[in-house]
Length: 291
Length: 323
Image 1: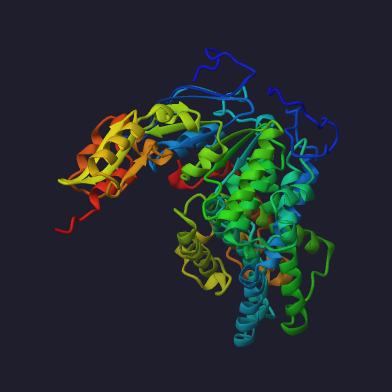
Image 2: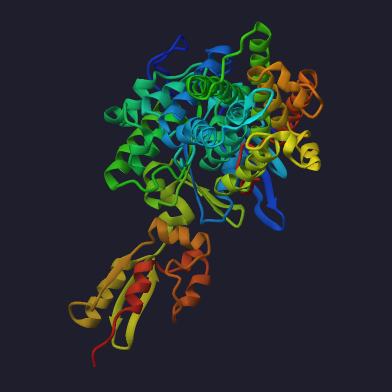
């Protein structure tokens, strides 16, 4: 130790900037509260970033209004294209918030040294991920509410009528958002830099939207395209949302003659596990050139 | 990598023996030794590419080494745990993080990560950002942003603080204020390792200076003694009948007296200089300061104690005798 005598004690929040002599110890704030603070911090940053709010939250609403207004023909079993499209847009919004937004945002934070900054502190690593997942869940719920707030009065979509349908809505949101968020975090290690992130991520999200039954009726797509889409989560999220918002009778028009909720849950759960494994194996806290 | 071989000395904050790190074929650090004592301000000098940043990042626990014994606060930084992180403060070169947050929001948030954090408002005050407490960080000037970096580095009341080129982009007044802050931290007992390109900063702040070149520690000394600076001979320069002349001597006064007698009064363009820290430093890292080539270029290769100072060479080069 130094010869200097320390004027401060090691009690709670001592005055001054003199080195803390107790040294060791975990943060005084517990993990749950740290996570909650981190979620608030993420949401605050999000809310103050106009481009992010525009891109992530409002864009799906705008798309829904445009497509919903152009095409309104009936597509069978008393269902209009608009209703079909709204359910697809709800699913798609979850993917944009979870996958696309994170896969673009995290490389920017990595490039700017935000991740390195966190790593320089005793913050448990999980707090960073708790912050991201918490933010996405809050935004996903906000987005579903916003889409329905527009769709219910203007596009002849009705809120789920039964408890079972509400339950389906909740688990599709939870499983779908979790899978997309984990894949977004995993995917964030792929772009070489923040500059290439948008170009790397956007096509993936866009292609998935085209082949998964968001913009087009899924059963009208070539069967090979349906097979490919069935490997990815978005197709199953769309199907789950149709089970929530469209009549049971329409289920007969689905490829398997039903909404296949059990299979949807399994596929989404598998993607959650896969995403988690990829996150743990590939996540980088520093820029690629930093080694 | 063996932590057992290095003894843990409580008076030593950083102990490095034979540190090595290569990136592919490029050797960045080639067997570097370094000891930083508790409570001292140690400045690392060296040109870009000398291995400074790699060394510091290894010490910070941000980069893995290839070989060597390293102990930072008695622990191997290759395996940083939260308790060790809490004792080490790092001032990173910020590049625009947390743009959408206010100064006090960022500092308060980071305070939560530490077991014995300082009061966020006091830290904001100490780095001179009180007036910007509620400002969004993207509205800060470069110097103010750097102060925020420092605030995040010291919020956990670290025993050891790393500062990587802390005053780059500061105006002279801000630099003075910053130096005062560093001195205060040091007098409170914080050990400080700083890298800098400003020799004046090292001279002003550091108890000891280490010069890194080619991935090795070339010399370690107090700034006033670096490269035998204190004992070096003075250089006397003037314009003789045959052109510029420069003589190194331990007795410059005597030489000037002799010259005065020779010229019978004023000696044309007479200068007496001793090497500045910059001269010594440039000699140590084996670089000509000017990068120019000229008749006196070969002088840069002679040993440091024979290297004429920048002013001598400038004086020797510049005069054009009017016939």
